Amino acid sequence: MEATELKEERKKIEQILGGLAQPANLPKIVRIEYSLGKDATEKDAVWVWLVLDDATPENQWKYEVVGQLADAVREKLQEGGVTALIYVRFRSAAEQEELKEFVPPDGRFERF
Amino acid sequence: MSRRATLHGQLLDQAQHLAKRDRTKPQQGNLRRAVSSAYYGLFHLLVSEAASSFFTAKGTNADRIRESFARCLGHGPMKEVCLLFCGQSAGWPKWLEPIMGPAGAVPPELSRVARAFFELQEARHAADYDTSRGFSRREVLTLVGQASAAEKDWLKVRKQEAATIFLLALTLPALNAFQKRVP
Image: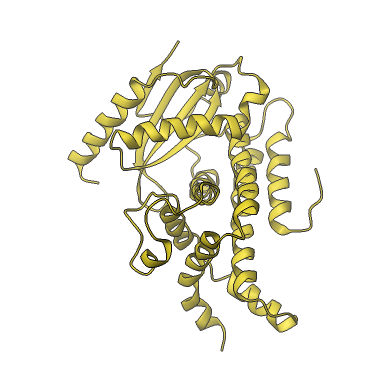
């Protein structure tokens, strides 16, 4: 992806993730982080980490439930014209604090 | 941990076991191996389905041919096929167009299998090679859950025509390599 295209893609991603409404009846998202880059096969990709409330009940962490959150976020990004491959991952807020990663995300959106 | 006879089943069970293994603070080594096992569980499920669908003969020699063929299926070409079957590529290639028909011909279960494959492949790559980012237990358990859900989806859809075409598409790039292996 050319530098200008990358900038455009980033702008779209920031607008969509920054304005994302909490999907109804699904676990509460307390923070969204994303990074844009190339995946293992050199395709343009965006990684989205959905950080869920620590109070999320155990049964709401099942893939069948959080997978619906991933679908909702992916759909919004694709509807908004994001062409990069989208990889959605999940963490709890407490886990996110503990991980102390070396590489900061490209963007972070706090939600309350 | 339950005992399963198939390699893919054992790998999926192993992934679950490793993700839950450390009671308090999960070790990155165990979490990363869990991601890898989840991906390979799905990989071996599809490879074994492809090999047994197109090499149906019985006997020792047939088994050897099936195994030899299975080793020719590559991760990269399989990802490309999966991108097609979950609508991540711009249309069908020419040879698939008349077979697959208009967009939307892929059953949702098959589309989810294809998505799980390339998403888990990417996660596996990060788990094995990228130490700049960590994995959390929740993150890993959802990836393992995605692999198990893909296995269930596959069992629902495997007898459908689209699934056979999917296996054929996975298989074709491997035939050249297979030709070189078999004298």
